[in-house]
Image 1: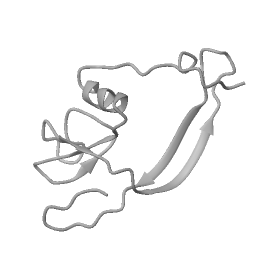
Image 2 (image 1 turned 120 degrees about the horizontal axis):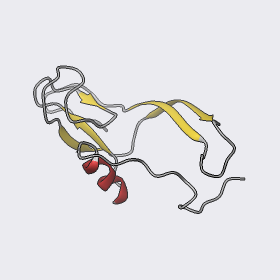
Image 3 (image 1 turned 90 degrees about the vertical axis):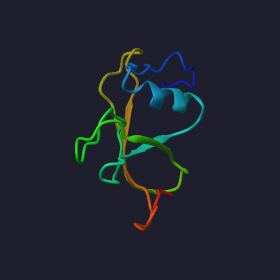
Image 4 (image 1 turned 30 degrees about the horizontal axis):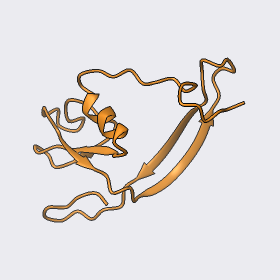
Length: 103
């Protein structure tokens, strides 16, 4: 049986590279990243651009609008220490233009 008790859910491992992302999550903010080199957005959060390999992509808070394309619940284990893992495929709807940003 699932519970709303936050101590039940496994906590993510925070590294120096992902610390800003998890701290933003703790404030109720979801971060994407935009590369100043190629201008592309990325998620998941990392310390380099996955498109052009430039370092230090810029943090961009998401507005929370977008389209969820798929959703699934993956049950890996029934023990109390392993909660269901939820995955989704989504797209943020934004227009490419000068100074464009995700919506």
